[in-house]
Image (cartoon, rainbow, N blue to C red; front, side, top):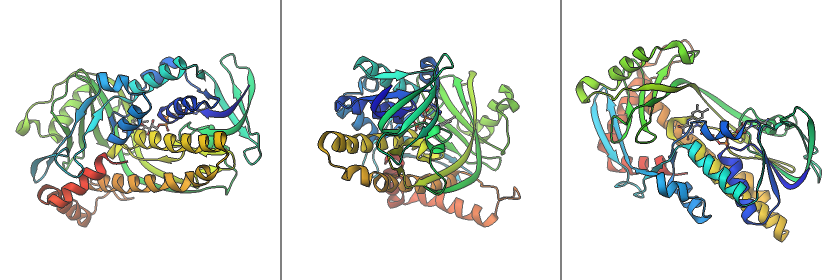
Length: 393
Ligand code: FAS
């Protein structure tokens, strides 16, 4: 097959890019390894930044969001030095998040793309991308029947995540990878229970971090900081809820609403940034471009932002012969990526006793962490800075 733009991956990056290109009249195809059912039920992020909601609205992709999204603007910090709340709608630029599960956004974007005549090949694994230095790169896939096939393209957008074929197609030395293992891991849980707080809950405790984030009126996401190497099934449901109660100080601040745990995942906090994000006709987007920890809910929002930047640059080039946007794609995205990485790193340091290589935590770091929390609690300028970065992308 052939297309002007071949998009690898049907996650937020690939589907946003596909919808935007289709609306510009650019011929594109999305190649996705998993089934449609799988990508539409894979629960991940849940907080959409105001910029993401605005982009979706601008392109008429926000019907689901308008109908089912919930505005959210309060963080509750439960710390060793007491509890405080920040309503970030009253701080910084006064913008709230929209709570909208990522898999619902993906479901909307798949429907809109197919409805507008878009082509998605599910159950189609991209094996290789070659010829990206030339004018007609080629994408080799194994389709649902196990047959191999080739796609010719003018441009290839790697929206296939950190382990995808896009990154593998980069010749050695083509990009520099800056990587950091933050030394923190979360056991991510989805509970079939209504939220226990009317806020995002961040609890810091000598036993470790615990987080509470609404996903819908029936389902709530919890996080428990766990040691590196923890397996998803290491913790019984009983132990999970007892530990959440302890760390979120349920005795002091009220019980958590328990329910069946319906999804688990261990997320090791790693970040990486590739530079540049373009190699010839190959462009890296979303997690394929940069991995960011979920500490500040940036990953899916960056993916949508970068897809919009690339869509506009591809339209300028393919429709008007103006390649300037493509030449500047990498530097423009990296600006946003490093800003998001910096804030996510600050959040990790704020909320976690980060163990050193020998597993011990530094008392000096602990002193800094407590001071940061107290500054956030008492200083309005610190709170404005927090609000602007927390919702910003
Ligand atoms: P995705 O990973 O979403 O999409 C890549 C797609 O490419 C996938 O559908 C995959 O099947 C496909 N693919 C991969 N290799 C392929 C190949 N060879 N051929 C064809 N297709 C291929 N972010 C937040 O902001 N907040 C959160 O709370 C949060 N929680 C997370 C929890 C978990 C367990 C995980 C794993 C991630 C979480 N993230 C969170 C980050 C996540 O949301 C990503 O940032 C977001 O999905 C990035 O979107 P994409 O770049 O589109 O990549």
